[in-house]
Image 1 (cartoon, rainbow, N blue to C red):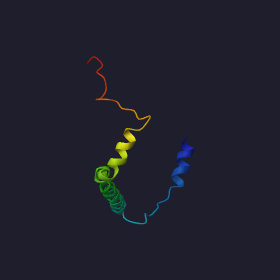
Image 2 (image 1 turned 180 degrees about the horizontal axis):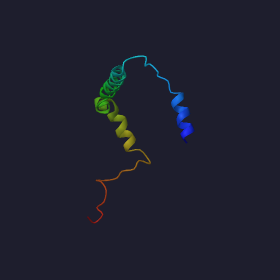
Image 3 (image 1 turned 90 degrees about the vertical axis):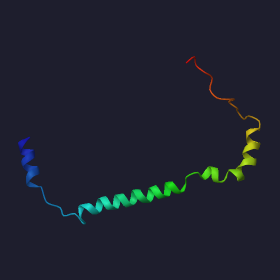
Image 4 (image 1 turned 135 degrees about the horizontal axis):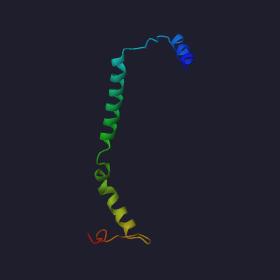
Length: 78
């Protein structure tokens, strides 16, 4: 075990980073902010176009094979 540790210590070299360490955090923050803006832009999309999908959705809901669950789940004795 000590031979392995000596070998690893002998081969240890110092690698210079291509940019300052704070720049990695800034890049990650910029990526997450960009993704948050993209996700935020899709908020409420389904409700924005409900007037277009309403007639087609109603026709499909009444079609053959459509399942209707009524008013909700039955109580389980709670």
